[in-house]
Image (cartoon, rainbow, N blue to C red; front, side, top):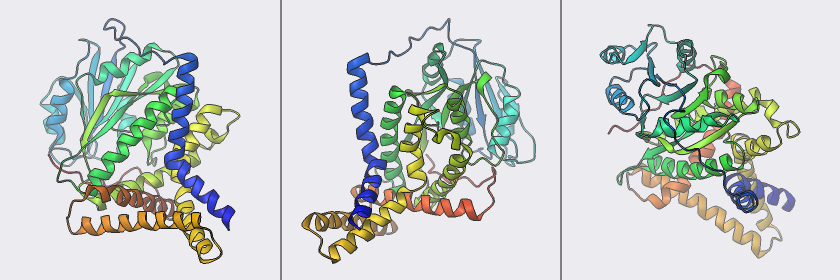
Length: 392
């Protein structure tokens, strides 16, 4: 019983905190031995041609802002192209885009999902680099330059930008929790990138070499993750660039955020199955270590270990357990009580941000369990209802 408890507790700790601590120590040692990896210098003459691809579905409310943001990005004249694909949109999103002659617009009435639209768009991309971004995210002015400078290194196959979530003082747990989560994720990605490679890219902002792009299956749930990891599987690094960032509003509420997280969790299981070759540490020694530590554990066993550590802790304390087990049980119970209190406060629209993090953490792990069930009990499709986000 005690062995089971300590294994469960260790795995839960390692997944969310231990890996970050270990990564930090390894990075410190690496810097002391080899120095910090130099950041590529921006040279306008050597920056590669690039295309910004935006897949938009019924985004009439924000698409004009996205267009203006995209047109205002810094990049050498003649080296930057814009391509928007609006397949399936039934509002006036395509009409708004058509007002801008600088943008190549692709549109057809049938809706096959985002990844099908992206694959279709890629047939029209003829630049060395392609950059993907969501229609509801706004990029910083230097984003393209900061991304594309990394391609002077031939070992780089993809570059992941940073996702930032707008947080307001009056926002709920979905915003506070999501914002905290992405700040922590960004730190881990910086260290992952410095050690060897980022483990996958987020669709809000990432780029790849056009020659390395591989179409993924049309029912892929995490197409951005799959596209980038297939490039990593070919031996190229995915670099993280925090100075290229996409800013978006948080989910409208916890229910909308849960819907999004369940889909991501289901997509995580799908990706692990499709990318099972990356679990081979003999073929991918560093990438496999990073992949399992940063992704696989979160998407598979860790929520079960959390439950198991609580159950075994209760059983041990009920028997001849020592004070250390009583203290650990008290800590676990307190954490879940704070999460419960956070849920109650959320439902009553009382904003206590200190309680949002444990609540969001529990919602996130519940989503993993729900996502696993969803993957094995439902048919997966690339067409899905997007989570509603706050306006403004």
